[in-house]
Image 1 (cartoon, rainbow, N blue to C red):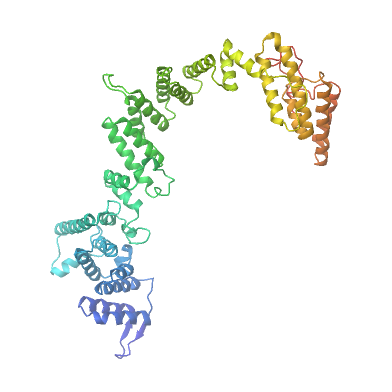
Image 2 (cartoon, rainbow, N blue to C red; image 1 turned 135 degrees about the vertical axis):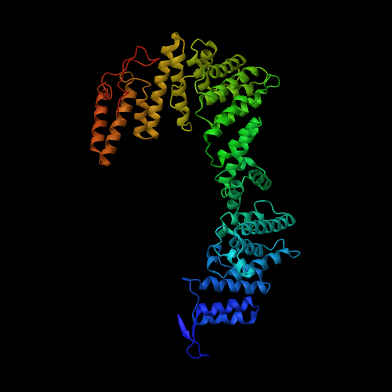
Length: 565
């Protein structure tokens, strides 16, 4: 856009021309002329975002603020590094030099806005691609071109001076490498300038923590990163990918920890190495081939010495446990861990039974159905039976299933199930749970009772099942009675009361299904009720002849209850 200048006839005034006048006035130190010119640009033309007008206008506003000593305002007005290529390099250099001089003053080691300004401007001026042609500007000021080799040497020297100044300010302020201004400067020179900005999101540095961490890892400074991060978060067990405090740094932190793990494997520090790999995994790191091989090497050596003297079974189990968690598909690690756990369980069987049980149980977790681990736990059960310890029925029943010749287990189960027969309905305040427990115990007793008592126990079971069926009929749904019937705890045609209860349940459910508009289900239920009323199984087998009698039910006819209903 152009307008006629009212001061001189036929002179065309443009926003670009006014900005050039303002830039020349600033460089000639005619500062009193700069602000009116900027104001005129804004009033007459506005500040466009489609060309270099906005960038040049903002940079001059930043330079004026810096000259007035308002460095936070200067940082706010400074354009992004990506836009500085549109700006006048003379103004950029002037403001950059002023920022460094300001930082060199006493007491400026915490002035983040000035540091951010210096980092962004000098990173632009010393950029490898030299988008602002700082090289050319120096040649103009010397009235002779600067040879390429001298330019590269000068650029390295200038970068070094900025680095030294910022590092000195970091030391004076006590900033670690994650919040260090030197880290922000190096990251800016490394291609991440846009993130360099003081803000509430970056309270103690110039770049976000994640960016700083990535930069440190990329430049081989993982030890510095880990030292600083550990000082901030000493509880390494809490370093997880999903934790809010660690999410930003999880990726580079995992790389750093995994790298340290590799170093520790090379140094023979097996447990620390495996702990490092475990931490890296919690931070979301997937082990590569070299890292998996390092874990396998650590697993093969952890807890062992070359001579065998000073071997540590506890350390070996700890290390193998860590390796197994990292390589769950590695069968050799799983097998070695299982063997060590079993050996330890046997070693402390008498001296520390609690630890022994834990070792055997852990071995079964690692290798289900391992015979040695199972045998160790069974030996503890046998010892508990001999001592009369309190045991669980499921544990003893499992032992008897694995060792049918274990008479102490058989006797314990028989005694445990030998409760007074329940011949009458429970009192009103007894619960359904009492009767169900009675049925469960008698069902167990049928399988383990002496041959001479099998018939008696079976009769007690039928009585208990009848009582439970009648209780369910009065207090629960028809489906509960039918489900009890389908558990095959007794047969039809023996107790008329039981048959009538089941038949009534089928008929009730048939009526419920009719009301629910389920005629097919109602027909099936009525058919089952009719068969039970006739003394027949509720339904024929769905897939051919019924299987033979179950264990503990020899001599009983098949009831057909293992069918769909």
